[in-house]
Image 1 (cartoon, rainbow, N blue to C red):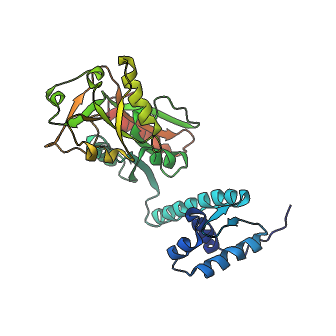
Image 2: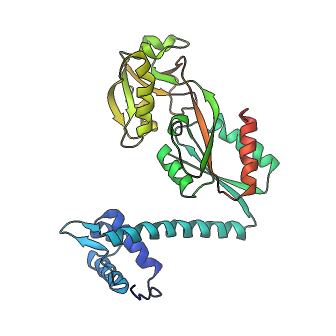
Image 3: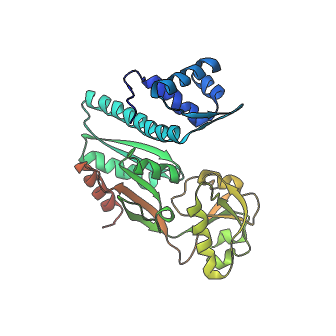
Length: 306
């Protein structure tokens, strides 16, 4: 066991180290901090000397973390996130708002369709509890929940349907069918509903499995019972980009009635018979905020769920 005195390691040094690790390049990290490359390099070497650890493997154009460096980066990055949250909460205490609930919603949802009404009703009943709302991609809000950055999230059903996450509980709210979104030039756009089999010749726009493999799995699961695999012609990085890639009358993507990024003049959303979608409300089982249960109960009541 090394007897290392860490009292002289500053928060600034930790920030330099974490950012350099994120960029994998000292020059780019130095630009972020408005430092010269030699100055930041010297600070990182000083940190390694203080810790008696090699944190980086240095190449001519990039740097890579050693196993020791990777471990410290993960631990210190989490600690910095926690410190930021603690400071934010200290400000809440200073303002006399000691009760708060952090909420994250999928950025492709229409918040007015369920979250804003829930917030309004809850705030009427519990005016002393402050609600903080974030919006981001499915994988990001799931990460926020798991790492305690928010107390509850509202995400898409297919992202939780077959997933088991330790210490996370969830329930399906706002149950609805899947829908096919298409341009109004598509002959199917005039229908009140369609079967998945009628999309066999469609060209599907899909969220890339690199970003959300659950979307691809959901799409394949809808097509499989009808004996075909989806003809995916375009991959995008987020749900918000799906409508931007509807270019021909054959182009289609799968969503549901809560999807936000639609142009009513150009797009049609047609329910797909015999399918199941909706949004999920998820929370950490070990969350000790008693008033979180009040929020969960209010959300269930408003959405008609048990």
